[in-house]
Every structure is written in structure tokens, then in C-alpha cells.
Length: 311
Image (tube, rainbow, N blue to C red; front, side, top):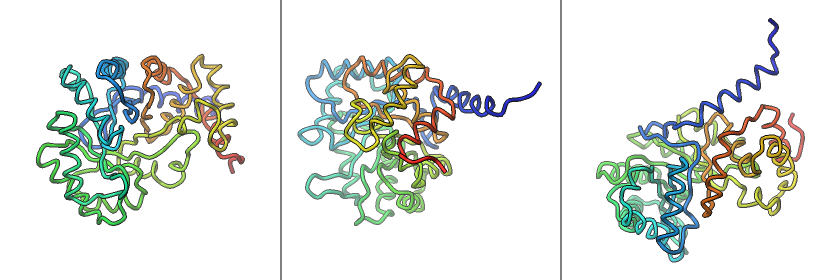
């Protein structure tokens, strides 16, 4: 039998994608996370609707819940609302891997000193009514803090039993390496912006570092700050959406499901953080798990995002 190299290439991508829809490690933390996460940056309002959203996310397998102290108006409100949900239904906590972030102070704007990160984490725990969070992340790098101070904060928080794992958000490769050099336990995750309309992580080394160092990748704004859904608002949006729509029609799913599947196909195993506050769209997001993309499909979307042919 003669083997067709093109069929082999496609099968390799499809088999890898299919195997990665199950739980996977959160770096070397010992925690396991799903292929899709739910982000709470827009969580607001009354406890009842918020609980319905949390339950919808968990019921449909989005068991990594990502929040931050800066989320909400006023500051910390998203964590307060989640705390009310967990106070009302404490058993929900057992079903989730809970992540939060600190290090942004309105008007400052950033502080990652050891004392501040410890205080910020403790304040987040108080707002959520918890004594422990699974993943604590520095939200944005603070250029005025030595990485040894960040490592010290992570060490002390973990020693005190207040966090299980530590990660960073929006860090460069160099900033991440500098921090890892001072840590006495493995960094668990990176949280870059990554979507079919924000492809820098493919070229700036972030995804490569994740594979090299066994870091989980949590992709924020996987719909290009809403431009994938609307088809406008960012450069190349219409061209990328046209390619996504071709695949969506073929696969019988929404454009957004294709956008999530495109992210998930990368071998760094990025986990899109779904930001919707509508339960039905949480369900729709899981359609990404049914999508079959070939290499040709994936590179067609990338070419549309680049705006120039691949070399």
C-alpha cells in the first residue's frame, strides 16, 4: 500500500487535537485542567444569575475558572460575586480549578513587590471567602520589581497554603525566564493574548517557551477582543472571519467555535479563556471539541491573519 504524505500530515494534526480534548496538566503543578476555561472579567449583577453561569461552565466541562482582583466595578467586585456564589453553594468549589490574578493597581498602575502580591492574594481570598486558590498569577509585569521579589511572594504564599500553583500573565519570554531562575518550584502557566487576530505568541517565543518549559498556556481574548464575533474592529478581521466562516459551514458549528478550535490545535495546547456571560454561548463554545482541522485549514487562517503569503 502506498502512503499519501498529505493524508498522513492531516491525520497527525487531527489525532493530536482529538487526544487533547481531555484534561491535561497545568504545567508541573499536579493540577489538571480542561481544553476550555471560563473567564469572569465581566461577571456582575446578582448572585442568582452569577451562580447559573458558574454552574453552566462547570456542567459543560469548563472547570478552570479564571478571575482577577481588577475585574469588576468597583475593584474586586467579580471576586465578591463569586464569593457570594460559593457561600450559597459551597460544593461548587470542589468542581473547579480556580485561578485569580493580582498586581494591577488603578492609577499606579503596576506593583509586584513581594509584600503587595501577598497582600493582594490575601485580599482576593477574603473577597471570595476562601483560604486557598489553585492558581495565582501576576496580571502584568512590573518593571520596577526584581523577579526575585515575585518568586519570594509565590514561595511564601505556597508555603502558607494559600496557593497551589503560580503563573504569569502578559510576560515576555525574557521576563518569564528571569522569574523562573529565582523560583524554588516550577512556574505553572503563561497567560498571553492569543487568537486568530492576535498571533504574536506564535512568533515572539511565548508558545515555544511553554513547550520547552512545560508551561500551561491560558489564552486570553481568544475572540480577538470581540472582533471574531463581530467581524470588525481589528485589522484583518474581515479576512480572518471569511476563512473561519468557510470552516464553520463545513463543520456545522459557529465561527467562534472554529476560532477556539484553531487556538487549541497548536501543540502548546493553549486553553482559550471563554469570556461570554451567556450560558447558551458557553455550551456553543464546547462545539470546538468536535471540530476537525487539517494543516491546510489551520494555515489558511494564519495566512489571512498575516495578510501576506507564508514564505
